[in-house]
Amino acid sequence: MQTANKQTQNRTERVLTQNGVTAYDGTAVLAYVNHGRWVADCACNGGELVAPNLQMVCGSCGARNTVTFPDERTMTEIVRVLDVRSPLNQNWHPDETVSELLAQNIENGLYPEDM
Ligand SMILES: [Zn+2]
Image 1 (cartoon, rainbow, N blue to C red):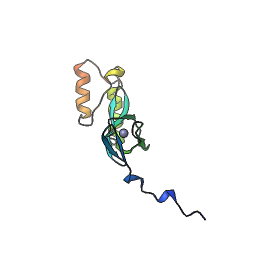
Image 2: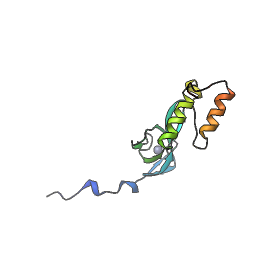
Image 3: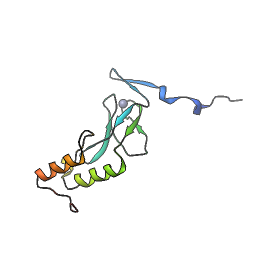
Image 4: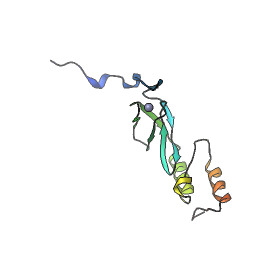
């Protein structure tokens, strides 16, 4: 009779090392926008495309990180403001406000169509 139940294993306790860096499952990371893509960085410096409600699994070390996104309304505003830029300039960091992104657009003569 088989008694092992893999679902009872606590995967958040996994520890992974990659190039001398330790990454833990469940580590909180912040989503940001790079060249029009929502991405996040693992503790091992691996970067992954991310999306709300999808688990981020680092392709470099295998850690399962917990990604924090802005609220849905803010995400929509960020995308709308960045959308008028060329893809290489569609960048947002969590310490930037939507107003700051908009000011950058105006400084560069770019305006979202419906503002
Ligand atoms: Zn990693």
